[in-house]
Image: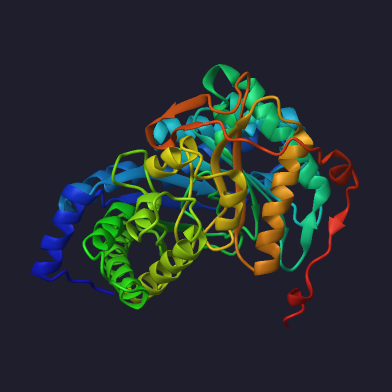
Length: 455
């Protein structure tokens, strides 16, 4: 498929890049590590390192060349790998940590920004490798720089594995404690999913699913600033007109992602997978999903009407993007990560946005509770309760939901955590003071809904 951009499209793209923060958020190379399996940890370490450094050797170079050729920033170059738990049946948690460090060495060697796939899929239960990986997560994430982790604890077809939910509450808190001197950065590299997709190019949730090719190129576009600008320029548009305006804007953004993805695929001699059309904000002023919602007429993100506005935005982005690319996948929609969105941060600081309102918004956004700082003295069962609530929304509504929260050790509501870069910083948000302990301790599985019987 050969794509051409007309002169007026090129001019529009230049304006979007220079004034409205348009970028390709990531080119992510997915790599299968299933052929690295073995029963000797040293051998598996070497196989993992060798395969990643060989397959992704030119990823950063190609990304930089494409950025220069088309004049569009390509912010991140990333790698996702087969869930490491699938390689871990013969290994102890300590040996699984060694695999995480091999991933980190490989990521540093090839110069990428992050590597995802220190992951496990445990929505119906745990195998030996899953149990070892879940235990290894806090040490692995606190002792590596670029490795990200995800765990899928539920799905519409299988229900919610509440034993895994309990373990993840403990793991998140332990990650934060081990990196308390860095505001809990290890917890910012860990996400808990329901209905996790196999082709998501965004961190921390990216992993290379078993249904994927040996190697694949997935692209994540962005552009909340572009959409915010378009909405702001049309203050009198009714909702029908607004939806069409956003669809047209999403179409243009996705066209650029499709072009870059196919060119990267050709240059790296790897199949093109998908374009993820998610609107992923940054801490930069003017690059905010919250600002889009406020430009629709809300005084602050979090005001009554916010969920409806977000529903319109998410739907229009999907419709516009689907018209522009043959293969749309990943998460695709609008992200609402608090620490990465200047408008969300302001809304929390001013009391307009609460954890409960964010949870309501996740019913219609593309993922879930993302990059939210919570008090450091929180009980692990409370974190598990937050995960269970979010997983229930995903399970019942047949959508992907996720939780990435950061316990701010030694900090309370209103104080800030700071991560820098795209991860930004955020005020600590209030959580319910009432206990979920007895609920979480029940264990077992919450059954799948009747809608799972759809065959």
